[in-house]
Length: 239
Image (cartoon, rainbow, N blue to C red; front, side):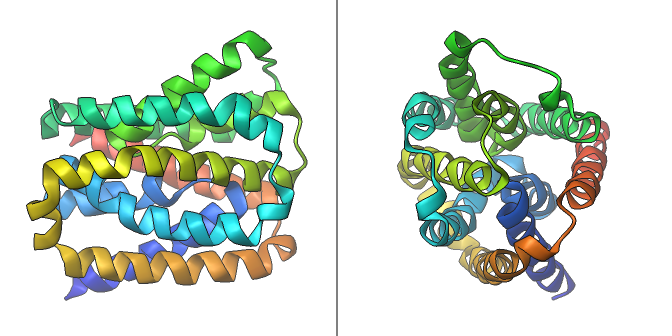
């Protein structure tokens, strides 16, 4: 019972974070569920609340989506997401945990150092980075840090940044979900109650985050989130 309560609370925070930072649901929920069901199943399970929260956020912010960026970055990200989901079937829990820990740690360091603001990526590499971020999204359910770094190249305003990152994340979800359902349907059904609670928490957090996004100190908030993600990454590397 205690774990279910913690899941709802963390899911709420994850939805709130994603509404402000453009990512965070997979980064916060996947390590938590991995404690209970293992990293492999956690990655597949989190895609459901992630998809739900992303759909809601994408709809509410649809007018701020930069369509050209979505095309340039989103298509390769979706292809990468499909490839990553297919690769996910061939990896075992220990290796997936290690990869997830590395991605979380990298995302946390990037967020705290503001490296994205100091790096200008060549436009010809943006599509490739989109594919790479999508692969990690499909493989371990985390791509937000890498995606955010690449999206800084497009010089979007904060709202357009979140909206476009959300739309790209939705494309990746659409690409990877069928693979998870095909390969792990029975296991996902076995933890449907946990997925249901996580989905409720994410949706609630998403709606609250959208309402209060303009009243929060974005820079301070992102640093706090990056610190949490960094701690989670180090924890998983040491597990």
